[in-house]
Length: 313
Image (cartoon, rainbow, N blue to C red; front, side, top):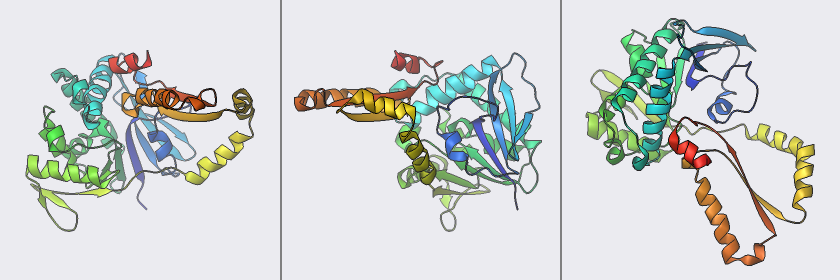
């Protein structure tokens, strides 16, 4: 049986404490079984990052991580990934802050990821790459001679050609996506947008059932929405309902109803719109005043990016 190799921008190490703001780690937890390898950034910034990944093993799963330099972090992560690709993929073109040096840093870190990962791969490994931080990784692995099956999953929306053409070097990024054997999306709308992009902007052509061909490469965009362990969440909720915190919350509410939101502190989540909507509810229907409370839990993230700091304030 092939070993599963998961690649993501950030790897949550088993030694880390505290909650995780993002959903990717939660979503992937059940896919990783003993014998799997999880590779990516350690979350640390070092003056002189080692070229060889550090290895940890827990519950039969190997965690392989590399550090980033401060320059790599600012250009690859805070810069291109989260100040260019994230707003672009959420159709927020007015928030793009494109700099050529950030794009070059993004490509450079993807090459470094590929070089470190290639040394760990076995010929039969199945490689599963995640999210917009690592769009070029498949192409970089192919350039190193890796012939393993490589899949990619996009955890964000995906824009049509009219959106993607706003991005300098969009053709190069789309071309990199075509180096994966399979590219997964949450919805048919996002998959169709990808198909339109590679056909109109790159000249890819249909090739077999659901596949497309670009030069010598054949890739398949699919719809495979991510989910959660619903039964596990239900068990956790039932346990939490009996906990001290839940009892304290119920006591504080008295007879009032509670509306609750739990999100990462991100402008794509509509947090301010949600608060405005709650204010309109109370203004239009004053009978709800003092009868309904709104609680928003917002985990801070990406505080090196100006828009996130401003939203927090």
